[in-house]
Amino acid sequence: MSSAILPSSFSYKRTNDLIRLGQPFDGGYVVSKADIMRSESLLAMGISDDWSFEQDFLKINPVALHAYDASVSAKYFFKQIIKSCLRIDNLNLLFHWIKTFLKYRSFFGSSRIKHFQKFVGLNTEHNLHCTFEYAFNKIRTDNVFIKIDVEGSEYRFLDSIIENQKKISGLIIEFHNCDIHLQVIEKFISEIDLNLVHIHANNHAPLRLDDCLPLILELTFSKYGVADFTPILPHELDMPNNKKKSEIKISICDR
Image 1 (cartoon, rainbow, N blue to C red):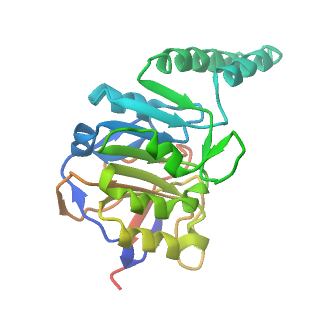
Image 2: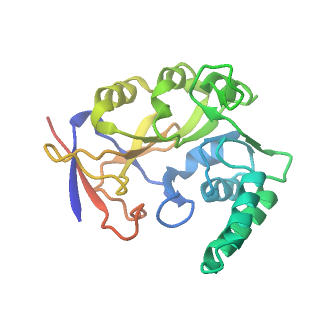
């Protein structure tokens, strides 16, 4: 197991009600159940071909879901089926895309579950992009639970999250390129009123050699979970994102 070290600004307290939502390995996240139960809506930024987290969330609390991702659609998944038909040497790939297409049509067929084909982050007139404010303001409830995995665009709207934090019940955010954005992440942690209750290092990315800093971090923030103690990481519910590699153990520097 690799060992990572984070600065003291990442000090956190774990809640006593953490659960794991989503599929095993990549796509699953550890969150506070109290935040789920108190949420009135779910805002997901970045779904790709895996919405297992959102499915598990709605099984516990069937709120309205707004999902944003311009990279996928029913049309996109259908095209992957057609392409896979040409690969008769890989039937597993064909079955994967057929299954994904059917699951997409089934899950996003509900009136309370909406998929917006937009990338969140850029302030531009391009119809495939929108701002965080655009996505957040389309939800008419308080206590919004937010999941963010937007491959680096998260840094474009961290200030907007802080400005709207009173309406946020819980937050999962995946930070990319942590080596060049470390001070920005530390500033965000210090400014948000939600409690940092879980940290997981994504083992798809390596550690920085000189100080063992993870290059991708998944952070969970909680509004309603009761923070009571500091545990050893990884948590017992954690799984490596890449199942072919070992999990990363995290230590918090005490200085």
